[in-house]
Image 1 (cartoon, rainbow, N blue to C red):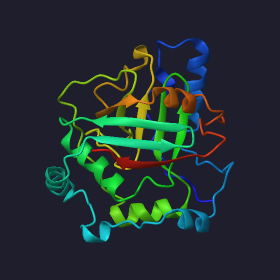
Image 2: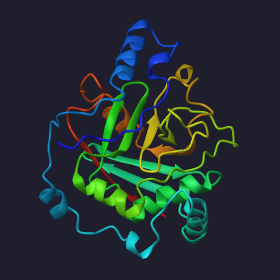
Image 3: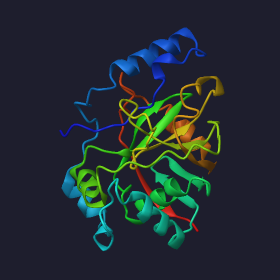
Length: 246
C-alpha cells in the first residue's frame, strides 16, 4: 500500500497544560510522526473510487499551481469565486464551514480544491480526541494523481496578521514544521480544533486559521472519538466529500 505523505501538527508532544496521560499520548504521536501507515483497515480499490467519482479534476483549464504563481493565481481566483461556505460530508454526518475573508489566499485555495473535486475520496486521516481531527489525504492513487494535476509542490504563504486564536471549531491549514520558518501552509490538508484552549500554545501564531465550523460540531466530536491506532490513524477510513454552499 502506498505510503501516505502527511503533514503533522506541531505541539502534540509538548502540550504542558494536558494531564499526564494526554502527554504520553502526545509523545507517542510525535514518535510516529515520520512513519507511514503500513496498513489500511478498509482498503478501497482504485476501480471503486473511479466508479464512485463521476467527475474528473478540471484543473487542466487552469495553470498548474506553483510557488511562483500561487499568490497571483489565487488572488485572481478569489476575486472570481467569492464563496465562503462549504459543507464537508462524511458517513457520520455533515460539517458546515464558514471561510474567513481576511485569509484570502487560504479561502480561495480551499474553494478551488472543493470546485476541482479534490476532496472526494480523501479521509479524516488523523483523530486526536479533545484536540483535533485532520483531513485531506488518503492512500488512494486517485489523490496522488489529483495533487499532481493541481500542483503538488506549492505552499501557501501564512496569513497570521489577524491575530486569530484557536478555539473550538476553528479550521486551520496543516503545515510541515521542519525547515519552514515562514510557517507556510500545505494546501491540501486542514484540521478542525476541538480544544482545550490550554493546548493552543504551539498552534496560535503558527498555523493559519481560515475558517470555523458553524454547524456539525457533534459530527466532529464523533469523528474525534473514533477508534484509532497508536499513530492516531482511525481504524475505519472516514471518507469525505465537499461542496460549496453559496
